[in-house]
Length: 339
Image 1 (tube, rainbow, N blue to C red):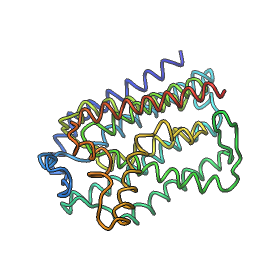
Image 2 (cartoon, helix red, strand yellow):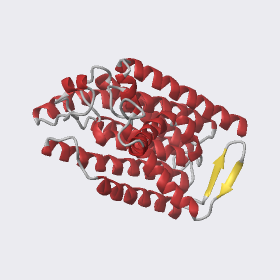
Image 3 (cartoon, one colour):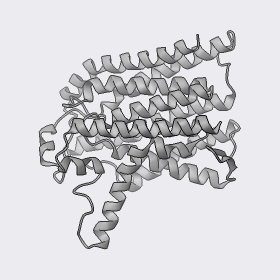
Image 4 (cartoon, rainbow, N blue to C red):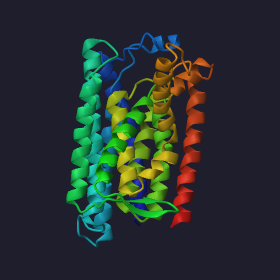
């Protein structure tokens, strides 16, 4: 019967997100909350000027409601009527604390988007401002895990458990902030970020099912449902963009899932697309400086490089999603074989 709540979370998140688009998109148009396209970007992106931004609000609401309803009800069923029973305090903190962290990142993205809209430019919060706020959000999340009894042990498939001591918390903060921004870089063409994150969430749901982490399984299902509901409005040609509001929130969800199962190492295969996106930006900058003006890629992040090579946005979404599926399969099999 517990499988019912996983399915219910996915359906509820999908339904709420998809239905909200019918109201939110016209509202965003009415208040003129439209995207300002970068002049240095692909020229054909200029036709997207004015497309409503902050669409990530749709799936933030859908995912939040789905988790808030389905996780406690599943716990109640598992504990024969005890409302928040069924899993340890630490596991509950990983679910709800992870949700709060993701919402905090979404709030940072919302302020960034709002500044972009008000100033009518493509730059919002400054990089230092973003980083300070992001590290504060991560610090609060990690502190909640510490208070709930989390330790400094991380699991690496085929190797086992490794206790990193106090270094764990420092590395965790750096990894989360880095990965959240990597997910943010993945948002640049219609449907890409939601598609990649959908398949990331599916892998997470399967892993949590095997590991018997019911709360995080529902967490993953809600994430997958929200991404799919958003794709109805965001797939090429997009009627709305998620903005930093959505992409930073998705980054928080992705990290909460990986750290929730105590295997952040799985971000390497499962988040291979995110890492390639941010890696291409770093390499482009370093190469540009080292060669005094030459470029390694036609444009970064790397999805724009493939655009400049003639790939359609749909083709990029399909290929990058397939790469995510392969990375997810590697992660899933490594956990199964390593159990």
